[in-house]
Amino acid sequence: MSVGDRVDPDADPDAAGPIEPVRYDVLDTGVAVLTLNRPDRMNGWGGGLATSFYLYLDAAESDPDVRVIVVTGKGRAFCAGADMGDLTSISAATVDAAADTDVGKLVGARHPHFTTSMRKPVIAAINGACAGMGLTMALMCDVRFAADGAKFTTSFARRGLIAEYGISWILPRIVGQGVALDLLLSGRVFLADEAYRLGLVKEVVPPDELMARAIGYAEDIAANCAPSSLAVIKQQVYADTMRDVFVASDDAEKLMHESMQRPDFIEGITSFFEKRPPNFPPIQESGQGLPKGQDS
Image (cartoon, rainbow, N blue to C red; front, side, top):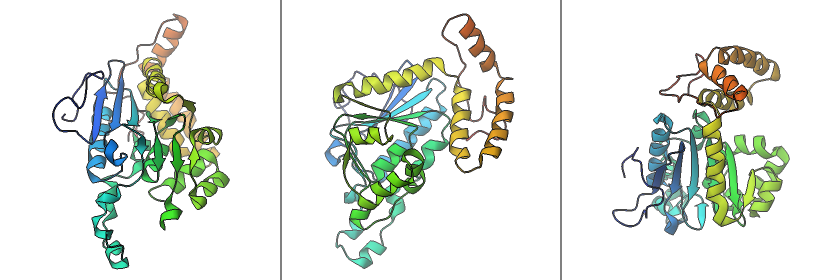
């Protein structure tokens, strides 16, 4: 399907036509679902999958009817890491061949931290194995749900690699430095229950309930939260990790004053007192509804 197509989420994606590396479904509740669709490769991250993934993220970001994005995988894996089949230049396993590898083609045109700069919330529904690049991508989502039994690992140290593409920045911010060092230095496998105890995922649910729970969470945000507020809050959280509390607090005061001048604030207060669902307008284009300088 072309980028931006709307499809019936109950339709059989394999009924006809070529299988795309990422499936894109837009629900009438304001939620877009991106499904990594290479189950035979454990949804291994590579150039083709990455290209489709970011194209569909762009489609969801620019669609005013989409307010929240859910990312998941088809089959037994969420994303089991880099698709080593794409690294043909190191098939000989020699130092010279490895030096010639274009890792840029593997990661794609953008790095995983791109999702942190999006105006719309991105929810990960981790259905199975989540390793290496797949774990980095999941961590760059704003909220994570996991299926019971899903396996996680950083894996880099056990492959002679380093903490790649921003995981050394995001992981300590989610679980703390000590836990992050344990997971990165050991490269050990841990299950969804431990991921929950460590604060890496919000909830662990039975596999057959994962998508319903993640989509239900996303739909609640889509129905009840102002898109302009979501965009600014995301920008605050990720930007404030790089600033001290005094700067962050002063900036928040300015942002609060600006938010109170937008129609969203009046609608939020009015709907609360009238005890009805809010009717917040969408963000039509980049920057709309945001204070100057806050658009991504």
